[in-house]
Image (spheres, rainbow, N blue to C red):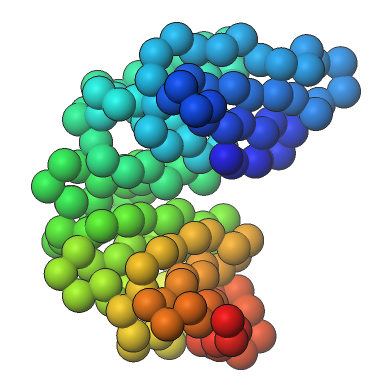
Length: 177
């Protein structure tokens, strides 16, 4: 399930996609794209074929891929089947492979290294580095899950602790399970 702005989407048990709108004047349920899906984030979904599709606006876009993960947020990032990051930003991604990827509203991109589970973050635009020096302080423990949290990111480690960094007052900080 994913919620962004006025739209919430979920993948049903039969792998179809269901989206509904909270926008005043919009239809409650959005037209359902045909096919099977494995991931949905905001208004972008990953099909079981590895193709990526946008669907919340009248004009739909498809990236054939194949891709294994998506991380949209105004711009978008995706992981190839080999775990390499492809992002619609100016700054190139570091070499992977990565197991998951997350793009925050701050313009920083974070990904989990497939071999170690350690987080790696980079700026999508050069000017962001000076504005967000808090991304220098990343958790030094392997993480199993990574999510975007407004201007920052959070990750879940293998002991059940939540680590958050970037956009938070004390970076990084942990939350006990």
